[in-house]
Length: 89
Image (cartoon, rainbow, N blue to C red):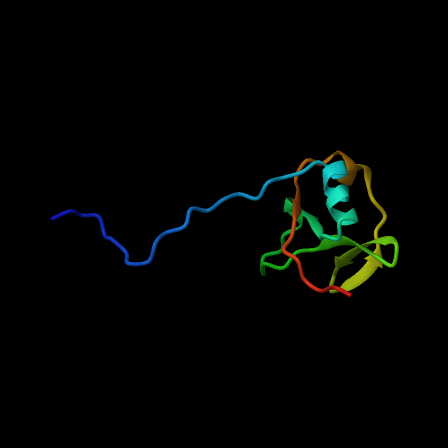
């Protein structure tokens, strides 16, 4: 008998999200999407994110919305991801 256990549920491979540069991520924001950096992920699965609202770049962090002041670290990072669409307005 084989020591391998077969599951009736197909296993899906874990696929790492495609990461973007800051200019690529901002292009996604302009198209109405939310962006985040991989290092922003919190332990509970929630994450801070940036998006465009009322013509301004906003960030959702600490459970509230703020105007986002972009840092040099943000601009040179290559770990930006696009988050699933939700209604944030």
